[in-house]
Image 1 (cartoon, rainbow, N blue to C red):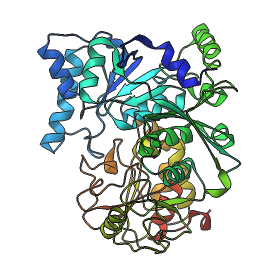
Image 2 (image 1 turned 90 degrees about the horizontal axis):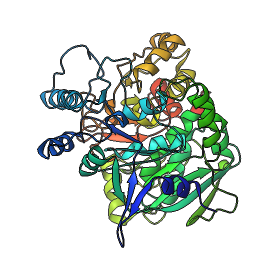
Image 3 (image 1 turned 90 degrees about the vertical axis):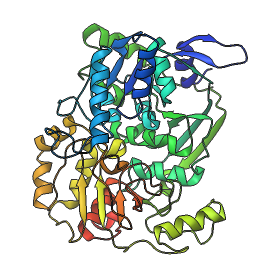
Length: 464
């Protein structure tokens, strides 16, 4: 029997090019301000209109400041990119969720929470972390700018079909272990290239019991293992999350949709190109120590003693440690922390803010720590205030910033200064990713919160 990936892919095939790629129909295209301008210019130069404008949604997120969004953006490059997206969306008749709109936020947070990303869909965006939407039971993947133009013009894309992989995580996670830790663990086991050429279906006990927001985090990080994307078969958790959302089907349409969505699963006899199984008891809260997301350890573990132990090339291993200012075999618990960032399309949802609040409640932000708490959308911001989490944060010495990608990639004002060490809930720890010379340790919201109140790398299980 076909895998779920086969079912969704095959349903969207328009035609197959002999000895070439597949022409695949795309249900939803998301556009942000960084990878779309050249696509719009290409459409304009060819005198084309968008083939299905109602399937395209635009919003700025990468360059948006996380303060004073009601004022003109100070940085001229960022301002031009955001203004250009608004102009292009208006000219081409596309739905646009601009800054200060209650619908605005990080595109990979807004899509699922608005019910725009639905099971069985094909979803693309000019952004590698489009894999996030796979948590809804969709085939979602990032594309290049020329491909963005292709989808605008035809609502189709030319793609080689990836191989299929199923990763099962069985057992039960211990306290303090989150979806982010599961993802960081998988990356350390597979390395950042271990899933190259595959589309990953996540399964097993841990995934079945994972919340929708946890699944979004797990799928978000698929790309960091080299995968084309990652997804999870829709189930009652998915349906409960989607019901009543703005763009989700309503009434009889909802009943029909759910009936179809329930067919979206791999059969018991489905054959995958590769199968991997892991045990939940092997996963503890995780941190990275190097300059790619696969260079990670359990928080109680030491940095690998050698490149071979780290599954890393010797030169790259040593270069990463030199950049981070760490040594092979070093214990990182107790290391002083300068910055803490909660947010990004990885961990900018309400559940992440609840987790952070559960640690900081009744405690105080450590002196000398700069903390940026950035909701993934205005809807998340509103929910934070509705639940009174803003008061918990204020009493502990934290403030909430306005939505955006923020310090995930430092295309805005939120840059970590050179040499400073940041505990970050984002998705990448490359050299300079959070600012020129910045040093990044990736972690879960619980680990970030523990660092924020102690001023050092701390096992959150000691504070729960």
